[in-house]
Image 1 (spheres, rainbow, N blue to C red):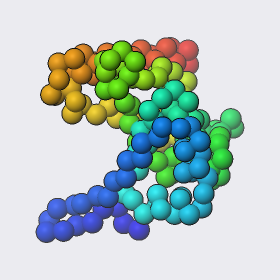
Image 2: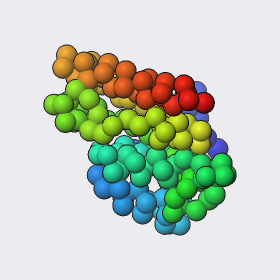
Image 3: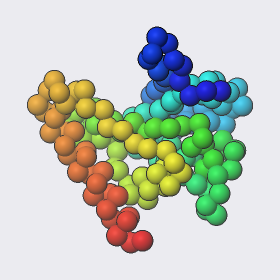
Length: 155
């Protein structure tokens, strides 16, 4: 399959964003052969965990296994980064009234996802429209940098 489609000089990509309210949803999504086939039909797939358990599950499922390998099993220990390109960090609905993520950004989880070849995004649309959300956006970026800095400082 080719990445993107060209139409009239434009390259068009198909993106799927899956909002995850429950940790089990991520496991089911990546474990089922039928679901994996559906995900493979998109050019970009992002997962957007909305709470601590779903964020932890997503990061564990995307991180390489303990031996650094990337098995193709969807049950855990890595191997799913070939299906998921982006983890979307939610900050506009956090416990601080929309001024931070609804989960703690843990450096080990973040580093594992990055090591697997996936990436993170923090959507800034809400920050453009609302000054309070803008503070949350900046705070989330700082939390993200701090979490990664703690992990990289140990390696």
